[in-house]
Amino acid sequence: EVQLVESGGGLVQPGGSLRLSCAASGFTFSNYWMHWVRQVPGKGLVWVSRINSDGSTTTYADSVKGRFTISRDNAKNTLYLQMNSLRAEDTAVYFCARRSRSNEPYYFDYWGQGTRVTVSS
Amino acid sequence: DIQMTQSPSSLSASVGDRVTITCRASQSIHTYLNWYQQKPGKAPKLLIYAASSLQSGVPSRFSGSGSGTDFTVTISSLQPEDFATYYCQQSYSTPWTFGQGTKVEIK
View 1 (spheres, rainbow over the protein chains, first blue to last red):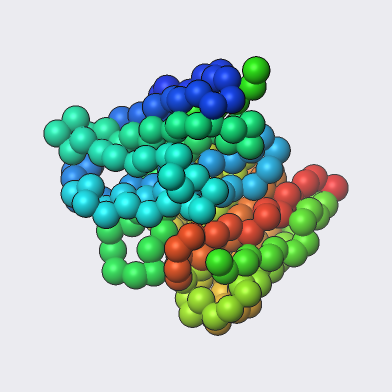
View 2: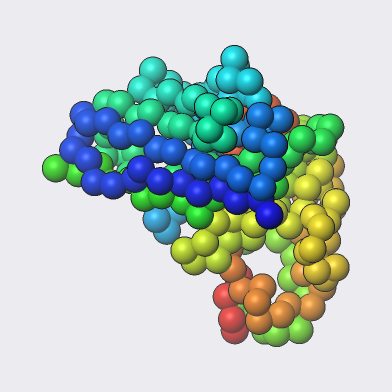
């Protein structure tokens, strides 16, 4: 059974840092591109970042570029999101999601349950 | 960035009703369009991918159609478990973008 379990969320002051983790199981993690998507409670879904299967290629939303870093450890089956210089507007639930492996068009076929990040003084 | 606009933003319907939600892209995305269902406090769940392909395990009362800029998802006979928020999402180009969501409520 495919499972994605996020952790690392919490309360952090503006300007602070946090590292989110997403532990994957039930599939060959190193074969899949992975993404982070966030959602302000009560609002819509917003794509944050993606990383290719071997970690050599990353892409970011403009709103987080230069502040967030996506990475992965395929030996540990874990995806990460290092978040620096956090702002109040980064407050959200952060989901990791697996991108389908089939030919295009791609889609998110599995999601984690999310981890909540609150940026507040 | 490609803008995705859903309509309506919310709707009230009864069990057994036929429900259609529309999603419009700001430019052609061919069939790079996916639909997700989200219930409160839960992760989104994939319903339809590539505009019209039903994800494994999703009931056949869900269907999707469209190409280019205009897409729809239809629930042929609304069931109690279908009351949720539905999102469209394009995977044609980064940043992948979502519609604002359509909340389906009980009438």
